[in-house]
Length: 94
Image (cartoon, rainbow, N blue to C red; front, side, top):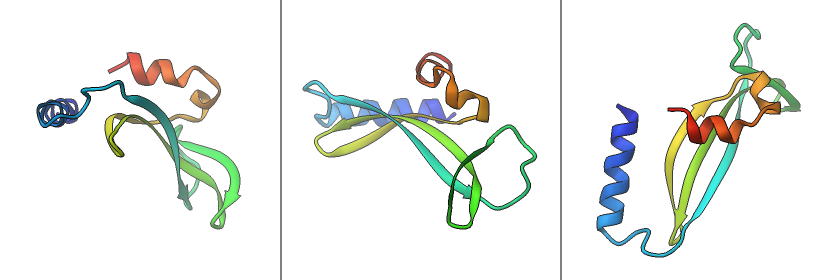
């Protein structure tokens, strides 16, 4: 369902004139502080910040055009994926 919504948003943006020129594609990792016990593979460790050293990590793939960002895909990241080729998983897997 989320993929369909993303496709609709991108189609609307393209119809309104976005993406006529080359665009920048950005991959970003976002770390959200987690204060519970580490009981899932989706909790990653990191440098202590805001009273915790555990985080939920999300990877996003975005298109940047005319100062606007369009998120193409977002997915949670497992701790063992931080050292692997995450961008391949983000781009190639649905």
